[in-house]
Image (cartoon, rainbow, N blue to C red; front, side, top):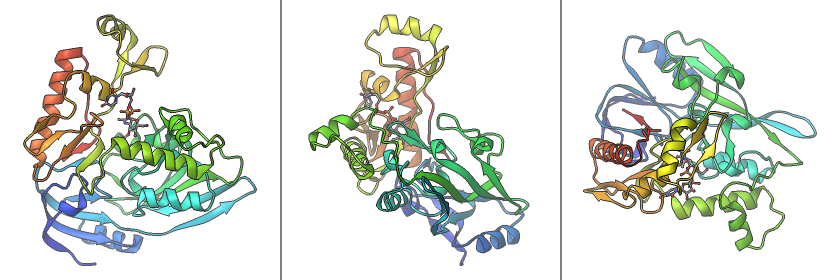
Length: 337
Ligand code: EPU
């Protein structure tokens, strides 16, 4: 475990942005993490997981701790369910595929989401009708200041749409070190109701899909819309889908009757930000090396040498244009550093 100085983070963020860490260390065990935290109590620290949900707009003047804890195992099982514990540094998609190979169900709709297991609870990742909160049992975390180890149950995490306690009450206080999921061993709850999944399965003449079929369908849909960060720097959805009061929405909807929406409560609806951005005429637009993806307008991309500031500037253009067109404010989903 070696501390490096003036370390380039280009390969540690999926936007592929060149920014430097004042100090950088990768930790491979809980013991290493504990000792780094103990030895560097007074220093400013920045915790880095898979780097798939952040936009670096400046160098990081802190000790960057990259969480590289690996390992996964069955910790409990009965006839119907299995409890799997994964260390925080496992790659999410590889973890999903491993579970599918074991015939453990529940994560298949979240195939190909970039990032590491340890950061999935922070924003309650979700896709194609599934969210982490549906299979999450608990996670273990270490308090950055006191090094106390604490377990958070599903209820304690206070999950919401791209929300959890880790983005709110305890923000910046804990590092998640492992996560436990409860998955099905039989009677899998195959969920094909979202978007294009059924269409994708039909293309391949699959009428009775298993876990692998659903995963393959999700992978195909994602690959058709979402750029691979290895080829084109990006951070998945850059914006959250805005939640609008029904009373406000009704007025907007009268003006734009073709606007898509999903009911989320008795008083609120969620509007797809991708649709708003596309209708505002921004899909596929490029400003230097920063732009709005041509197949999914929710995704901002780095064509090569964009800086974090360039991407941030594009995100502001998007927010401003959407607001001027529809009167709806959209917020970033990624963390702006
Ligand atoms: N749409 C457009 N134009 C676009 C993009 C979308 O008109 O450029 C429309 C679509 O036609 C569709 C609706 O907007 O009617 C919703 O689109 P889609 O199903 O592609 O999903 P999304 O709302 O754009 C969310 C998540 C994604 C997740 C997908 C699938 C958020 C912020 N994003 O996107 O998550 O993969 O649903 O479940 O909730 C991520 O968080 O990084 C991410 C990729």
